[in-house]
Length: 166
Image (cartoon, rainbow, N blue to C red):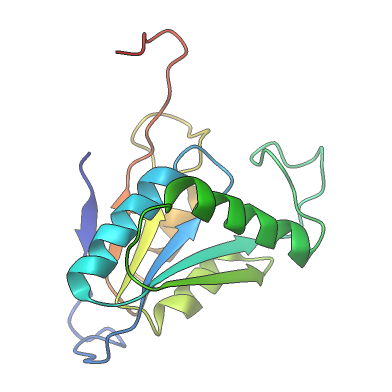
């Protein structure tokens, strides 16, 4: 899997910061959570910092939000999603684990704010329904160039129903 890590541009707020904050992994309710969490865990271990699993949920209302499998009506539902993802994908021992669930109508702005205290922000290239393979999703496009830490963009691994399992 190829992952692009984009460093901060010189002169960007936060460039040259020496405080080692957590690696923040932005997860969503899609098929890419496992790849994001594994990449974040590797980076947190390499950097010797905690891993923070972050989920930002907005005010979507079923059935008007076809981009989500499930919509959360409250903090409890969103927190249960994070707990499920952690159990499914981070069962092995690793760096200290933190969880953060935020409610914000603008997920990109919330992720930019989270980047202020992070060593690295890990984000998926797109949701599980991109316009075309390789396309960056709207949240990813809105985050790039605005963060206060480097960003690792993990490509979405599309599952094929016709590909045999080998």
